[in-house]
Length: 420
Image (cartoon, rainbow, N blue to C red; front, top):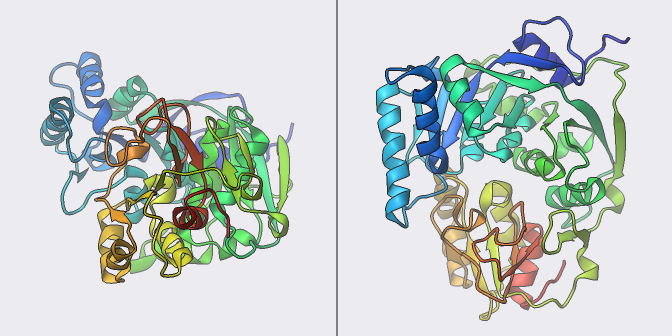
């Protein structure tokens, strides 16, 4: 048996104090960061105190983070109760990393990356499946259930099944107006919803070196739509420079030379088209060119997948100064306050508003289906979010199409699905 390991295996072996782990092994590993957000707080805190006693303490308040991102600004009493529970727990446990609604908040996955709370070689767990986003920082990041999180908060440990590793090998470069969202939609369409179940997606190829940090995180973010346990890649120059600012030291992890992957998927970016996922599955994917002329009533640019600075810039640049169609409700939701502020500093927000676009405050908003753009009955929405299941954006009687910011811009102007 070969003792060579993938990036993911190396991280899991080092954190479980084992010299070697193989796919299928069940291990208990030490954590570097555990985080949760507002919707789970009642169940999470109850389970924590049931497990560790009414005077229970977290294992390390400096390695835990809490975020208000799904339910803010609060739309109902129940939402305020979750926020109050979070505030009380943070105060009782003296949690260091806390991001309440206000001057420094946003979608948890993007904030974690902005604040460098995830670093190469670390293990990150969160109460959200899109925790996999942080794998673009060369770490193992995955979502866990509320009960596992309660244990993680108390012990600083979690159990894992060591995943198989699928290599995604990229050749060539993106064509104009084709990008990371098209790539990950294409891959999810190929793998289907459970094609990467119990697997790690490991990305490689020269194209990754030329992608921005935002593009790379888009790839990792939507890997979970194919069922992946985690998604991971080596650092590129831009990401490495960002993480090592102020002389911060990092330890990158690489896959052993000659490692045998469970599967290799090769994708030639030269041939990739703009892609779209039709209702009601993220793997119902095909070229935008074959979905033209479908009427769209709302365009939504936001979420941890599509509300990053690059995403909004791409949407803005694709508009080319044109106003959106008056019959299309067009909404932009930046993922974090820092992105929100940058949009105003660059005059992008002001210009978008002049072009007929509504700019919302940061948060998960309609991607969570609670507020900030809930879809209307018997209407179609084209969104840059990551899921389009029935009712995902709050209304089971609407239909959601997933696409890139560039396609969102053309569609918002035309009033029907249109590529560049």
